[in-house]
Image 1 (tube, rainbow, N blue to C red):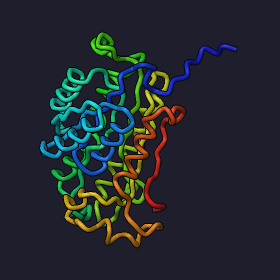
Image 2 (cartoon, rainbow, N blue to C red):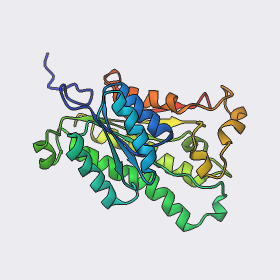
Image 3 (cartoon, rainbow, N blue to C red):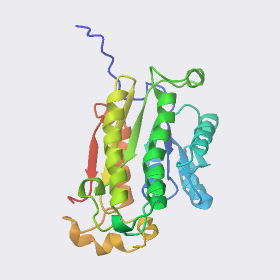
Image 4 (cartoon, rainbow, N blue to C red):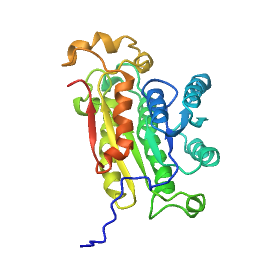
Amino acid sequence: MNTGVVYTSGVAPGAPRVVLVTGGSRGIGAATALRCAQQGWDVAVNYARDAQAADAVCAQITALGRRALPVQADVADEAQVLAMFDAVDAALGPLGALVNNAGVVAENQRVADMTVQRLQRMFNTNIVGSFVCAREAVRRMSTVHATEAARRAGGGRGGAIVNLSSKAAVLGAPGWYVDYAASKGAIDTFTVGLAREVALEGIRVNAVRPGIIDTDIHASGGWPDRAHTSSALIPMQRPGRAEEIAAAIVWLLSEDASYTTGAIMDVAGGR
């Protein structure tokens, strides 16, 4: 019996496999960009400041036989985000996926000592930046609400979005960075809401919640060796690797996850 339901895993058959990875020049973002290339995606590698690192990731992508585009933008700045998406459109073609990975942490601090400036930086990057990037991706990928310009360029054929959350969203990170945890709690809610909003528009939306991962983001929070000194907190007794998080992200982008949307996947060594 024909029920009239159209089953779709995301990107329509034959659609370009172009993915934008925000914060793609280092850590989890870089590992994700490379794994995407290994799986046949052309990759736009976003960076905020370190052009040399983004160029190095792009060189590895092109060595794998895929197209790569380093593209600068601070995701907390809407004008820069708009310019970034326009650059991806022009250089690589219609977008098929977005990995909302760009984010910031701050030094360990109690809520009683946090300034409004710190909170604004945290929430503007981690929450507002993810919203605006997802908005622009939906405008390009939606089978129902894509802009006319996107359709003329070959878009409007569906896609997938993966947001980066954190196990801190569940644990709260007391005494470390409750603001960061709160920003990732917002990402969890955003993921579920957006997934349901665009479920009939050919777009799947999921999130990955990493635990303590051995990347250099801890240095920016003033605790460079945190991943290893905190191993006792993890049931598996070791920090995760960026490549392990990337594997989960790229699976959620793939056809193997065709019936998965609104999911939040813990990749945290049992923490």
